[in-house]
Image (tube, rainbow, N blue to C red; front, side, top):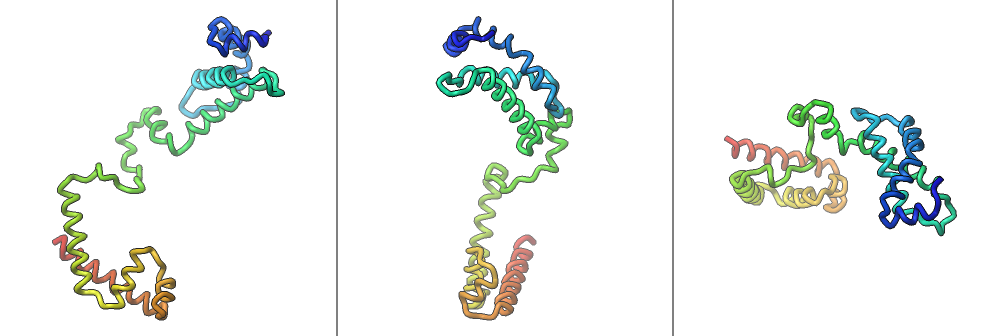
Length: 196
């Protein structure tokens, strides 16, 4: 039976008291372990999570609150196991889980989509050429867009919809839509000639 003194000693780092509490709660950890399944893992992984939950319970138990240690410990054990199962099955750990199951990262690399490329993926030459293209395209647009197209393009860069742009410029939406199509065509034609 676990006494208050055992908990206080364990909280202060007494190894004998910690071992006593662990032995007392091994059955509870095992019982909770049977309720969960860790895909690609084994029961020992969940047993360790249960032990982590028990250690957290020991460290954070406050006897001034109206909860007995047994109830609090069982809650911490269960929560730790649930968190482990959720994390294991989440997309965040998907690549790690696949790698752990024998399917290497390189086999999965084609299916990984990055939301935005980082500068680490570009060589200094790529960055320089990209800046050059932006400058050339800006000059091209300045020379080749009509006054209306320039206004529309400015609003497009600010991510307004064609309906909003029509309101701003007091023009019919159809006219703005046609203007956007002309701008796109000019840009694509320029980019096509640049890449040759």
